Image (cartoon, rainbow, N blue to C red):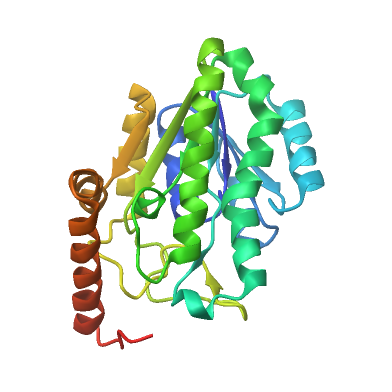
Length: 265
């Protein structure tokens, strides 16, 4: 039985990915913050919940030790933990910006470094969960887009280093996933859980996104756009970045107006 490790495993997309993998015979180890959401996963078959703050390097290292003690090998690491900041860049506090990068980027880098040898042994897969904002601009998401651009840059570069060992480095870029739609649960510094945007476009269920990602994983597709918006954005941004940016800005204004929200900063 193959083993996958998923960060943000108690959240919407993380849970959906784990369920999709288990459906295909995988064992899933799920990293998330301690709490009821993670504890509830302990009753699931072929599941190992690992309570861990991914921004704590020592806690990450310990989670890897526990995983190695429980499982004979590791075949897949999914870097899914993330936060977003929804709002104008001018309102972004430096502390929030840094914390967002700690969760979205540095935690994935640190975990990948811990797992490089494990995945080389199985000729496994690093799978980074990016976003449309990882390859294209996204209004009112400047910090989030920056972190996802960095994430993609790291794993696309790591791909060349790990290829000689038979290890694949894949990047999945979902568009809007309806996991916390309209329920931002913002912290005092303006950070929120992904999927909580009021201005989401063509939102898809997490289970649908998970199936698309699993298909890309099975084929070892280097870049996996997830959803119609992601596919269109990837093509449009490559053909004409300026045109894509105008279309993106216009569509967000329309979306916010339709949903009755103010579009001014």
